[in-house]
Structure formats: C-alpha cells, structure tokens
Amino acid sequence: MKPLIIGIAGGTGSGKSTVARRIAEALTPASVAFLDMDAYYRNFVHLSHDERRKVNWDHPDAFDLDLLVTHLDLLTSRRAVDKPVYDFVQHLRAEESKPVDPADVIVIDGILLFVDERVRARCDVKVFVDADADERLIRRIRRDTTVRGRPLEEILDQYLTTVQPMHLQFVEPSKRYADLIIPRGGHNAVAIDLLIATIVRRLQGQPT
Image (cartoon, rainbow, N blue to C red; front, side, top):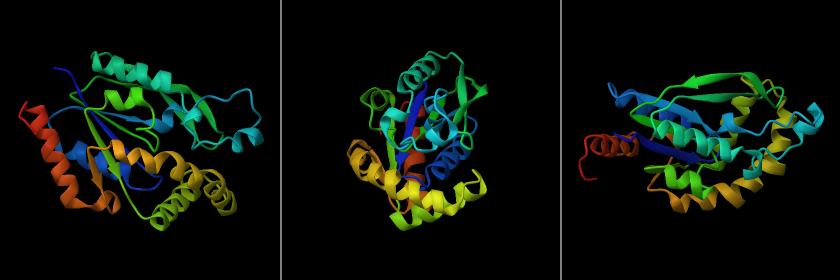
C-alpha cells in the first residue's frame, strides 16, 4: 500500500514538531517515518562562515527542493533514503547522513512546505499549524539560544530582517493550501485528535 504522506507547515515556533510527535504516538502500531524540511537546506560550502550567517534561510531558494522531492518519491516507492543532517551552528550540511526507512506514514514538517507545488502534490494530508507571532518568537529565542548556541542579538536581527518578512511573503499565504488549520499552536488537543482520527480512517481505507 502506498504510504500516507502528512505535510505539516506553519511559522517558526508554531508547534509543528509537537503535532508530528502526537501523530506518531497515536498511530502505533503503524510505522511512521519523519522528514524535516530543515534538513534539506542547501550546502553553501563555497561561502565563509560570516557569509553563511547572512544567507536568507527563510526563502524557498535556501532549500534543496529537488532532493526533498526525490526522497519523498523514493519513500513512496518503499525505498529507504539517506536524509541530510544540517549543522545549524556552522550553517553547513554535515558529512554524515541519517537513514530513513520506508513506513506506512511519512510525516514531513517545514515552514515553507506548501510553497513548492511539487511538495504539496505529494502530501495526502496538508496541515497548517498556526500560532500568534509573539508566542512563535519566544519559542524561537528559546530554541536558538539553548539548542543552536546563538546570541539573542543575532536571533532578533535575523527575525526582523528575514524571518518575519518571509513569513508574511511566503509562509502565511501558503495557509490557503492546507486541508486543516490548527489554531493556537501544537497544544490544541481537539484539533489534533480530529486530525489523528482522519489519518486513521485513511489508513483503514475508510472515507474521510
């Protein structure tokens, strides 16, 4: 049976990963594979570290969408892929990759997931996780300071110069492609339960 591909989009810090985890936990014993769009950033090895810091990482051109589409097609054909691993401290693709085995359900998340028509077409269920801008910014600050080791000034500068403008230009408009919009971030239990029920029916071959 063709795997069911669940696409989860939304702004930075909206709660996409929380929704993805809830889906995986609820679908046991079905197998679930994860792809994160952040792993598919282009590898700007020809740039210096300072130059890489200035790249607009929130623009669609920053992603290797051809590779992402190829990996989705391989997983759909029940073939394993080697997902890139991205080093967010060095702003480079790591030498090692992470094997991802075929599964009954493929969950992929990313801020710009629905911007590319090819990626949208491969998603059987498209979900947009929505959250207030101030809440998303707070989550981003916490993540980037603790996980990625970035100073607050750099985080805020990036947010104002690229993250917020690109959200308004690309991320927010892509909401119209979603089959389901989950408001209030990744902790909306009612909406997530409805989503899980829909996925379970699809896996069982029932009409949704």
